[in-house]
Every structure is written in C-alpha cells, then in structure tokens.
Amino acid sequence: MKLSRRRFLAFTGTTAASAATLGDSLLFNPARAAESSQQPGKVNLDYPTIPVGKAGDLRVGQAVSFTYPDSSSPCNLIKTGRETRGGVGPDSDIVAYSILCTHMGCPVVYSAEERTFKCPCHFSVFDSELNGQMVSGQATESLPRILLSYRASDDSIEAVGVEGLIYGRQANILPSA
Image (tube, rainbow, N blue to C red; front, side):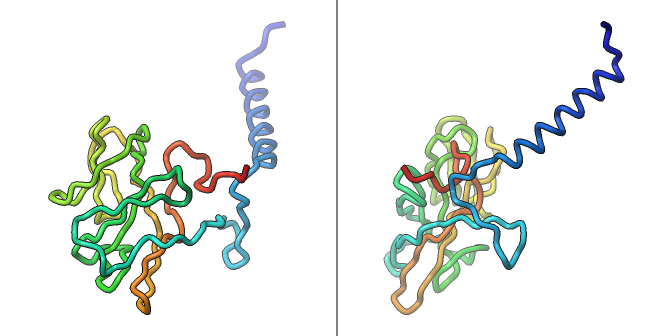
C-alpha cells in the first residue's frame, strides 16, 4: 500500500502531538518541584540556604570558591567594587556564579583585570557584572547566577538559589539517594 504525502504528514503530526502530551504528563521532576500558589505555573525548587562568607572579608576582584547547591557544583563569589545588578552587600557589589562553562562544563577562571570569567577549554568569556552574560566564544548561554542574600546584622552572605541551569543537569537540585 502506497502512503500519500498528505496521509503521512497527518499521521506523523498526530503521533508527535500524542507523544508530546503523554510525555508531558509522565515527566518526573527529581527536584520535588512544587507549583507556587502565588504564581500559578511557576516552579519552586527546594534550594538549601548555605553561608558563603562575610561581606567585610571580601576583597575587590578576588574570587572566593564555594559549592552550591551541593558539593558537586563549584561556584565563585566576587566583590566587583561597583554596584552590580543583582548584587548584594552594603554596596550591592557582591555576586556569585556557577563556574561550570555552559558550553561543555569546563571550569571557568575569573579575571579581575577584565572583570570576566574565561573558559580555558574553548575560550568563552562571561561578564561578571552583567549577570554572567556570555560575551564571546562557543557558549550560547550565560553562566548560572547564584542567588544571594545579605544580612546586615552580622554582615553574612548566604547562597539561596540558582538562576539558570547548571551545566550537565536536568535540574539544579539532584535527587536524594
């Protein structure tokens, strides 16, 4: 039996739509995502709150290493020395990013002179003062930004979430073993 182009397209279109609907209903989110009652459709992940340092201990341009949201995710905390969008601290100049390049996961290195993160593997460059935006290179996405909170009472900085997807993950929060 010969299949006409019209019947073939109708069949494949129906099959694809059915698969997409079924796949959407069967998705499992290992991060235990919950729908927000304040914003229906928005997903909230159960990010841990982890102390990462004191604002007064930071020096301009010096990267401070930590891991977040788990020990398999290296990050850098940077005091930029100028007010930065999304920055915290007394001068709103403290930011943090995952240091796994969004191209292939190589660890990026912070350059205080250029105020950028550079990937030594494939030469992508990310702007530390513009939300980790990709400036040049092979990467097509910005570095995931680590959301921070600042408490003036004890000068402490805590990591509280991630904006963007950490390289190599389907969800930023890994499932419990």
